[in-house]
Image (cartoon, rainbow, N blue to C red; front, side, top):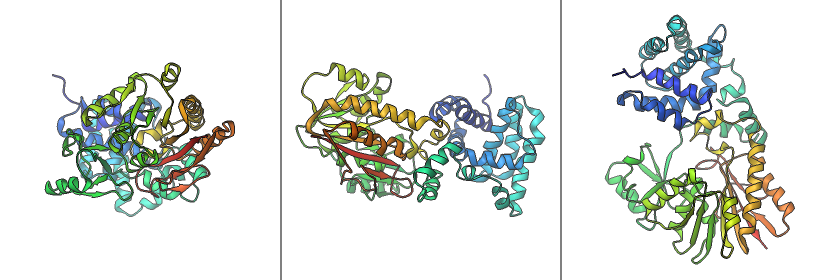
Length: 436
């Protein structure tokens, strides 16, 4: 049987796959987890997530520690160094173990020539730390590196929110909380908190969602009590505010136009069982909608097609409510999905805005007069939020726009913006469009 590669090799491969090859972190980890010992899985995920979250900072440190950059063909040496630096900076791995394991990893990558380099760089960092020289070392990093963001992403945030930049940047460098939404059809938040307390699981209620619970120590879904039985779902607090903003009531025809993975679809059905809900998303994405509905014992009509194809073939009366949680840059959820910052190109906000405008144009004819469409993104960039709405309002005299009163956050011209670090939960934007 082939031997399993060491933790540092697998972690370096994950970082290389995300940073250099554009793979999602979930995909990269899924591949790497099959290659390491079970005992190393937790550390692999920690380095994978943390290494992506702090990559630009660690890359800047390497630049300050190296006499000259590592050659492109030797990128595995670079990523082994990044993984080693993450261990000594952010984990409890003993210094000598992190250094020795990083040096040993070079043998598995056939780059034994770099043993002296890796040993010298990591020990050079430890010497700076022990001698109190880290501040001087880090002063050589530029603002984007200190924020651990690619330059264009750092510029987006600075241009959009100059007064809140530091708060946002600090939040995006943190581990996100694990937040649950209690299924009010099966239990109450108070009873579920009591259940957690009885099992000695630390938790507290969310401050703005009436159904949210935050676990003090994140765990896998298999370890969440009564998850399989449908008592709770994993959903960020900002996303949980969607149901109130939809203003649902029994008998309404409701469309979730970009529904996968189905969290908001299920939340709406839990909140108001009397609605008639159609959930739409592409076949390659809609499997999760079916799975969530089945686990929670809920019923909706799921269309395994895109919104355009659904609109072309739609039969029956128009919808009273539409939720359009559109694809976006994901800048509001980068702490939860740290690979997003590395998978975004400078032109992406404009590209997403074009897609968002197109989806609004498709959805609008499906809305009944007197109905409302809730436009939502997990972006914190005005180009994808207020500016998309401004263009839409200008071209649709039968539309009104306003911030849903059920959602707290910063008031913008047309909607409500929630920012990481400034508000509980992820960054999110909501705007309610009414049809005259």
